[in-house]
Amino acid sequence: MRRVILAKQKLNDLIRQWVVERTVLAPVKQTTVDFEPVSAANEICSDYRNTRLPLKRLFFQPSEALLRFDFKAAPEQRVTEAPVEARPTVVFGIRPCDARSLVLLDRVFLGQDYRDPYYASRRDATAIVVLGCSRAAPTCFCTSVGGGPADRAGADLFLLDRGDIFVVDVITERGEALMAGLALPEADAETLDRADRAVADVAAAMTVIAGVEQLGPALKAAFDDPRWQEISERCLACAACSFLCPTCHCFDVQDEVLDQKGRRIRNWDSCMFATFTLHASGHNPRTETMQRVRQRVMHKFSYYPENFGVIACVGCGRCIRACPAGNDMRQWLRTLAEACGKESR
Amino acid sequence: MSNPYLPLQTRIEAIRTETDDRTLKTFFLRFLRSEDAEQFRYRPGQFAEVSLVGRGESPIGMASSPTDGDALAFTINRAGIVTTAIHNLRAGDLLGIRGPLGNGFPIERLESRNLVIIGGGFAFTTLRSLAAYAIALENRPRFGRLTVIYGARRPGLLLYKEELHAWQARDDIEVAVTVDAAEGEWSGRVGFVPAVTKEVAPSAENAIALVCGPPVMLKYTLPVLADLGFAPEQILLSLEMRMKCGIGICGRCNIGPKYVCKDGPVFSLAELKELPSEY
Image (cartoon, rainbow over all chains, first blue to last red; front, side, top):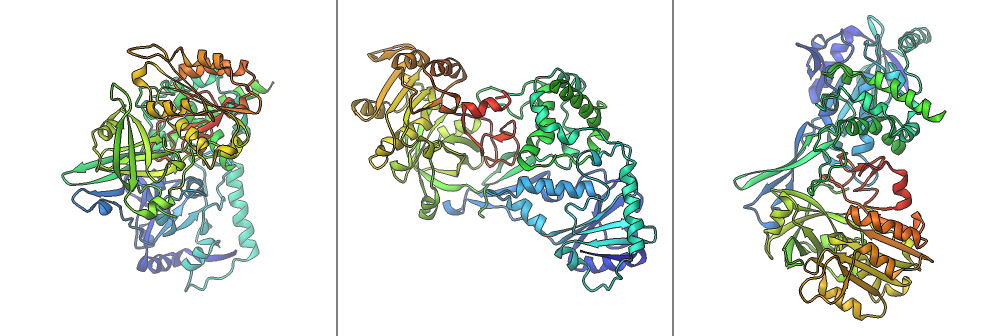
């Protein structure tokens, strides 16, 4: 992996080069800061902790057609796959937590036995340029869940902002392809040392919630602990957390028909909704909000880690900012860690 | 890899109404394309998402056994929007299939063992597939003694009546059919499945019990098996859950870290005891 210096005045050259054949998405400040297509560096917001929305919607759309139906067609042509538009894209300025979330989603959508072609074609067409964090937001807790402001997971290029220059780690082949045609100087040891230490300081300044990474198995033993009821008292089951979460991936599938044509679409869904697990027979394994809160937390901190070895939360804090009832995942984790500590005594 | 969301088209060859209240019908399907038929290799205990384009999909266990020939059979209960629409179809209509899905019964584990197959109500359908598979000419020598205990609330609700009758006449399989309450000309057994299991008293020696049925039947049958000496590893169950994708991605059908569509629907009682009891 090579580490080079990119002067900030040169960023525009890079963007203009990319824009020729690719869509470039970068954080743009309107009423909020969110990813928008840009064609010049000066359109990019330079002062943001993170975007309001995570980027999962780029690969796993809130609502997308999977299949198309044509009831007038011959039987073999009645059902066809909906086409996926996967224009080559560069995402510039995604934070390490959100890039990491894409790697976590990959484990779900690109499994060993089944590969989601809709997610896969968009993912294959997209390059990820991560911008490491210079400051944590008050709601950030990435270092408690295995991530950090300098986490390179999911990055094709990884940038550290050093004032008038970026230090650029060219990590993957796709990253190399993005830098083609630009002769950039290799970074010297001193610059690298100062850059790495600055971002390490950002990580060190963050409060760590103790024991989150070891919670997995302990949470299973604490399945019936009364604290689950305690933490879910104020939950409205509105699912705002799920929709703003970079790693939540539940979806519903519905068929729609108008006249002789139709489509099968998948829509974002959430385990927080009361009818999420409702059987046609009327049986529902999770009727209480507490059960659904427990499911959501266990999925991220116990079940997914059991299956894939890592926590399915990146500590971006969006759930904390979004919750209309003032619930705070960090407080929940502290309460649950307490419950687990108690169990093991 | 092919698109796992794309159903393969089949044509309904025949429909057999199983129960006198018409809530259960068996649909016999044949793939439109021979390549699809050739690629669809399934095991008893697996299921498929039966896809009625324009309405939706339902996960239904395979009632046919691979030894039955090319046609696939699904016994479908009319429960909601999609299954009601499927019930309104006729022979000659098209139906989509996605599958085979799920783990199915662990055939390798069942070889050389005595199989005790216990079913209640319409949960019997995938057990029928396993029983048919085991008594097929080429397969019978691979398994030990076969015992089937199957019950329904009343005679009019029994599935596969003709086939069960034929099986009762065979001497390579023991079949005990029972009803909770007799009616009409019923001259067979009367009694709940747990009670009949106790009467039949299958030996746990070198045996595996495969049990499918409504929660109340399981609640009373499992202790009977325990009393007969069946360890939790020797009891296999097939579960159901609300499903959508059927391939472990949409997040809906999990019990703890396991997805019923992908890691199940067949679980041993020992495995279930490790999972949260939230099903």
